[in-house]
Image 1 (cartoon, rainbow, N blue to C red):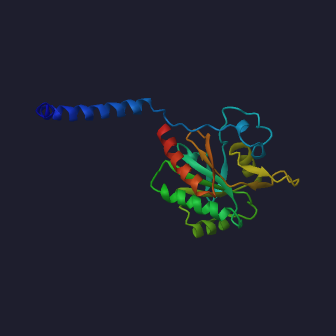
Image 2 (cartoon, rainbow, N blue to C red):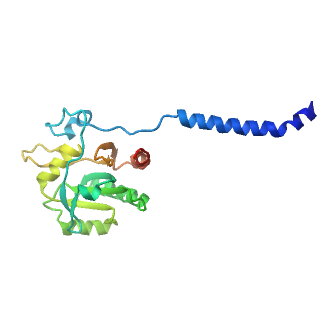
Length: 222
């Protein structure tokens, strides 16, 4: 009996290896592909969405824009064409959540610094304060890589409309000024088709790690 098993030991090992390989292949084929959701205005907290689009259930995408970055350069959607990007809203004099958000965006920047598919975009909600010079000072202080990350200012009306009608990420402060806004801690993940694919708490380390994972999922999808 021992001699029988010794004689066929090699074949048993080969059969075992082949079985493991076949099972692994079948598992990979049957394993569902991870796909991120596509966020529509009707599925987002109504406080963050302009009333004119709260009913929209499909085909939502980021509108065209023209803003000025920390280097005084005009930034449009053409600069983000064919890119996956992370957007947020902040202001340079904020002393509460903004420093944490910026530090976490710096972490995202550094983790993805060699990935040409990924860019970052931060919009000020106080353009009357955040001039080009102020944004440049802030960018230098925080270590912003201006080849990958634009801090942008512009007309308050345009930024407000982008925040409320495109990125679905800012509250109206309701004080009577039509374009006053309260930014949230949200980081917004946008795909190459200008669609929102995720919201993340920019002050939460766990959410930042999830954002990085979701970027990789989105890259495989694209």
